[in-house]
Length: 378
Image 1 (cartoon, helix red, strand yellow):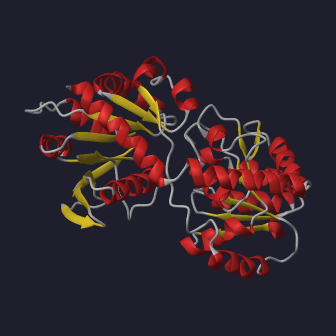
Image 2 (cartoon, one colour; image 1 turned 90 degrees about the horizontal axis):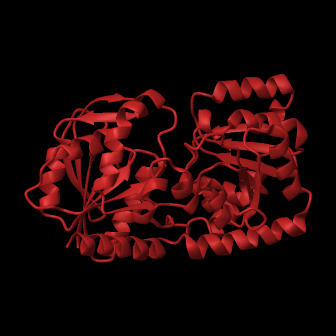
Image 3 (tube, one colour; image 1 turned 180 degrees about the vertical axis):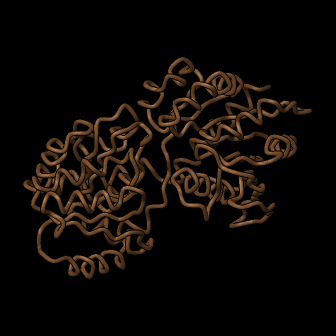
């Protein structure tokens, strides 16, 4: 079948949704389907290109408001592509793209599905204005895919439409992490760069409000470990200042961005991975699955999102109260102080990651949803 993907950006733009769209698109092409992606460019320039078999149309970006790129003709181009496609697959949230689509009148009724990646959390004023359009957009979709049962249950927009929602697990290319002898050898080198033999707590991600990085720093006085932080963002200097204030800055290692090779190795270095997110903007936390692929247990928070689904409490790690530094520290110490249980959690985590969150499994599940949507459209 021919599928048109509608999304905000596409790699090389960095982001969880962007990476997911790339992995899914390339895997669909490998399975024999045709895929065209319609997205915004990061500059005021029209680009058409093919990357690993995926046709990409990048529309000139005029500006960006509330993390939403504004482009000309998004809906029009999407309608034209849709008329030559069996199905259109939207990746929410991209309010401008969804708004544009609502005002198109295709000559042929092309069915469309939506992957609902996350609720809009921070832009509450914008959401209030946009919510009528969002409800209409979801009403018109044949089916909606969500990455966890929790997202369907807790989202104010999905719960009323649960009958048309389908839970589809994300798929990740985990081969570069799991059983990677090069990464394991590199891990030994990286471990030797740390100033002590203390166990290692790892965090990777953007240093932004919803990640709970301030909670991570506040947990440090209660955990005798080296803290390795990979990522960048506006809260970086605040984290460093807080660590100095607490007298633990000698155990905080802010590495900025890391290469894919080093990131894979750090997952193997870590004794435990921390995801202390405090807002449901963290809809899933794919980094948890990456840590699991290395056999590393995770301590994450009990958000009303897919985070606890990605990291099953007592199975692949532990879940703790949101926004509580002591609870986070207790969870980390629970892993670090019980190596036998930690090894068991890590083994279970790795098995689940490699079986349940594989790209072939995702492609099979997504194409089943596609076929159901096409069939229901008549």
